[in-house]
Image: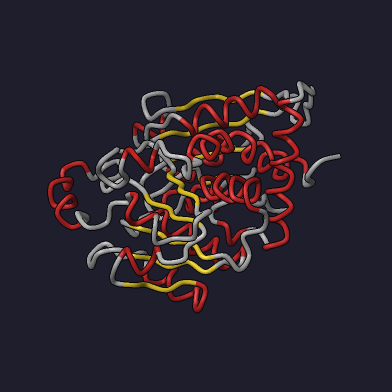
Length: 305
């Protein structure tokens, strides 16, 4: 049977995603209570990084260790992939030696090509098009604080980047309304937006998106590889900062999320970032627990015993 991959949120059914979120919450409880649970004993995760990382690497490595498995970190300096070996050849070789592979890279097409030749599950740990593992953590965090996100209103403020694209998929899969405020020239992928239909809509102003929102989310104005564009992006996004004035337009219990790292006083004010409505630290921790649930599901075919 062909390996099952996690390239976008659309690779799982809505029911599977909800079950995965609930499993992540349970695994978090187990870990905090000191319960030893090793469903991935003798399993090996190959971690292919072409982009730098803090949360992704530490969360996946820790997840495998706590679940009884092992993780191998592979940078471009460590592999023939970084020296020009064809992607399909690297996929064929690595997938014969490890049980699951996560890839953090630039080009989404490279990930798709790798997955098409892999014998084992491949996880998208970030591409220029999608960042689905972060959405698992975001959804877990919302469920922990507020319960089911179905029917809620989420505001995306800023760059229509990979995170925004994954939020569009999440709106479809989890049944919430996503309102996106992004400047012209920085809109999300048109194809992903089109398939979302009524679940997502674009608005001209951040204030319109933030009004009556249950959750406000943003990201840096310039992602990795876009540093040379920063001055232009600062001009384009000058009116798209998430600050206390914007938060006041949302519902009183609205939460703020950011996938991190954040640039205080650019895309988010320090007052919001470090304020009582921010749940960014729980969101960051939940990368560990949601990725445990994802690995368990892909490697065992089930969520729990």
